[in-house]
Image 1 (cartoon, rainbow, N blue to C red):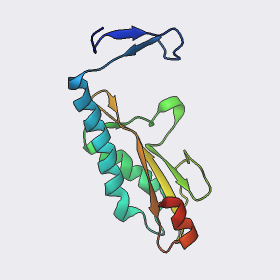
Image 2: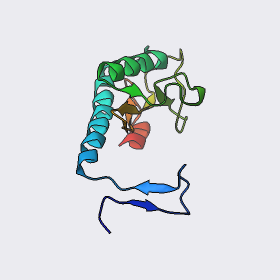
Image 3: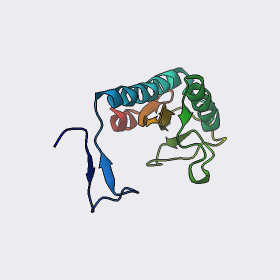
Image 4: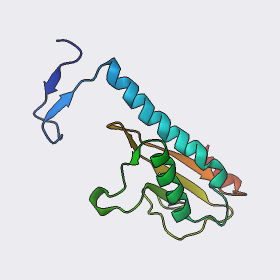
Length: 141
């Protein structure tokens, strides 16, 4: 069996029932999409401040992704109207951006999913907003 053949697996939940094994040329595309996800999360660091809305952060993610030749994979997926997911404090995951403002002491998770040249990047990061209590910092560290 060579490392690049397509393997059929009757138990898989994939749409067409196959798993495609990719080679080195595909890995570069995967790396680029993942790198863009990381760069997007880095670019958000100075923006995550008290008073900024999650909608403003979403707008930034959309524009940053587009400016880098990709599209947000979540945008339009099953009617989802946003370019990322933003969870604040007790929201475990996949919070929906809105006009909610960040406030001092919040912990925020932002999940981005750039689609670049057919490859998905998917990553998230936790951010501390202003002065965060030590106990809350423990959740992030």
